[in-house]
Amino acid sequence: MITFAPGPSKVYDRIPTYFQDAYEQGILSANHRSEVFMNLYRDTEETLKLKLRVPANYKLLFTSSATENWEIITQSLVRHSSFHIFSGSFGKKWFGFAKHILKDTDKIQLTPEQEIEVDELNIGQGHDLIAITQNETSNATQVKMDTIGALGKQFPDKMLAIDTTSSMAGIHLDFSLADIWYASVQKCFGLPAGLGLLILSPKAIEKSEAIGEKGRYNSLNFMLENAANFQTHYTPNVLGIYLLNRVLHDMEDIRQVHEHTEKRMKALEQIVAQSGSLEFLVKNDATRSRTVLGVGGKETFIQQIKKDALSEGMQLGSGYGNLKPISFRIANFPALTDAEFNQLAQFLARY
Ligand SMILES: *Cc1c(COP(=O)(O)O)cnc(C)c1O
Image 1 (tube, rainbow, N blue to C red):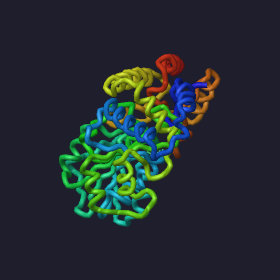
Image 2: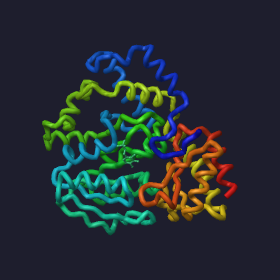
Image 3: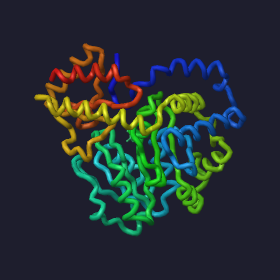
């Protein structure tokens, strides 16, 4: 069975080899204050920066999930309150967690077809951070890099925090455009869940130090003190970090990955455009995600096509939340092979 679900998603076929290597190399029992672990952390950070084209002076931190990053950002990187712009469920959840901690947290909710109109945004002095879900997995939408760039220009005094949980390692992100980026590994990294990544610019680190929040197990300053020595603040998910290290070493430069992702998405889009019964969940191609395709249709049709796919060994990703009965989603993630993708394309082309 091949799963096209957008998270947890298909893991790389090489994972069993990596597992075996981790066991044989003794890394699984390595102390997280040891040279062995520190070298693994250092090498993983360097390789991530190289392959994903992250600026050299940014810092990689390990967390447990993207969800944890929501809370870390609000606790440790927001001085007054954050302002959230989103169209889907993950963006809304992030807003909810932030609002729980800081009551002045505010938002604009867009429709999935709406681009962010940067010129028309009015965000007051009380908001020192803007929160963007770059790839909204729930409704298969995206925010373009150009828009993130324009936000940074329009609001130079506010910090941008970008959720790229289902796009990092799948498309080329311009990390210079924002100070806070995060993801977790069970989407485009093709890994088992249980590890979150938080990538911070020097400006974000300075801000965290200036705010000086301390005392929680995941207070960012506490994490940064440990990370300065390539250590973590608690016994980390060493296996997850090891697997990430191997995936990063084996992946191509993100620019090539990006091209590949784009090529496959265009092929899928063409099938939907030519189909008599498949419909784009997101009609606006400016807001349509490049790593997750949403396909809409009548409830009976969606039920039937998911069943037909299963009988041919393919699991389509279900729609999210209230979109569940009227849509399915396809993960266009690098761990899916071209052969698997072609099988899906041939299947979809029949509808
Ligand atoms: C999956 C996802 C999350 C949550 O990730 P966890 O690792 O489960 O915390 C957050 N944001 C987006 C956009 C996601 O796709």
